[in-house]
Image: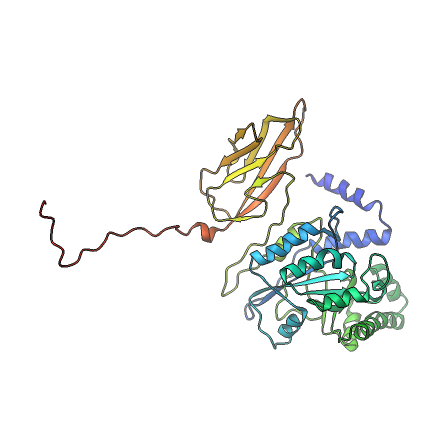
Length: 410
């Protein structure tokens, strides 16, 4: 995909949005895809990857803020497969204040705003995996609104692993905040006091808890917010700047990976961890889906260094099998075989895979078409540690005893 095409696509996607939504949408992409915050792990090896979600749907296509439910479930399965500990907000707080020790690599799941889809789409998945999670709620969006969570649903989720944090009263856009800044220090201070203090008071009273965490709406924050938030009683405040949280990360600007439905690489980055003094670097999860069945499956981790790579194109109407081209990273174009009955195209890797990931691209034409269809690509991961281990130990000859006599026939 060329840069020009990407630019035109973004223009098309943003054209139907209001200016405020447009600015917020562009900022979400810019924040979530920027360079992660770099941290020093020389003294404390524990790192926490904080995931930030918004809306979910099992019927709608992915957007920046809306994640397909199937993708969300695949991501939760990936956390399990990677053996990453999913911690609660309480555990995160205890670790940050020095009263709890965490594994070197953990994950905190957060969900902003309070969309009703959280209850119907994400909550069943989180219960299935037994994962705790945190809801950052803004006051004006809690209640009888059609698309919002109500107090009863929130309380039910709190009984089954959910924690609560504040996300302001009105979820002000940056343009609103800048308007109050322009009105002068007193007006801005009063505005911030309302957003931070009133939202906490409402959540404390409604859910009978003491709220001590806050997620900046859209990640936008200014230095004036720090004193107001501290005075209001907040201990930890989260941004939308990607990066791992260490023990030394500032409690006022904690990094967080906002998982966008249109950028798969963010989850991969969120689940990859750097090397430390006691452990090697680890790759993140590649969550992919393909329109046609493939092997190895997209995003799968395999132990076999000489796998068979295949794609089933039996549902492609008017396929020209002679046009199919398969390319494998490190090998280029490969001589695949074709099974006419099943329309399966496959190739057996003939040289042991050595890189941690393998990328495959398949292209084809339809009958009588002059140009190729859009290529289909997927990636799988090689578990190199397992792949290099021998499957059996070499056999040793049976030892002779000191009383064993030579065969008389010799």
